[in-house]
Amino acid sequence: VCVLEEGGKVKCWGYNSEGEVGNNDTSTVYHPTAVYQPKDRNVVRIFGGTYAYRTCEKLDTGRILCWGYNEYGELGTNDYTNYAYPAPIWEMHNSVKQMALSYDATCVLLDSGKVKCWGHNSSGELGNGDPGLNDSLTPVEAILPDAVQIVAGGYHMCAITKNGNVFCWGY
Image (tube, rainbow, N blue to C red; front, top):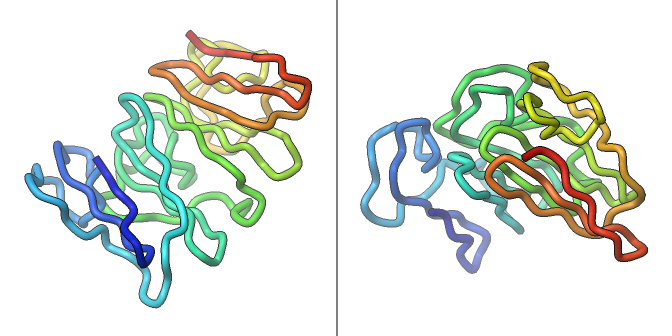
């Protein structure tokens, strides 16, 4: 569990075997603990998900950092390493409006209305029309009209488009 406090600091606690608390450790944490943060930076938004075992944050500079479970490359760090501290992701930071984190994939809604995803794709979790066992360490564009909101479930994503339609992918 993570919370964003007034003043732009993040605290997390709970099960921590994959580094999901973000305190540079993997021991279970029973009380709110400060997430390791870059100096002189405030967090403006945090993103979590159902069974995601990871968290992401957006800094006041627009930069996105993520930590925790990364078996399928779902952190966006271009590798399969679990991070017990916030690590930078893809260079699309300033244009990220929203993030959705499922168990094994991550999607971002960009200011343009496009949705890009990375991570596991065994059941079409990336929304690119190519389900299979191909993980993607790099963002791929989901095939749907301009979105205004995205949300994640355990193994799927959904988006609401500009015209009010709902699209879902994965399982």
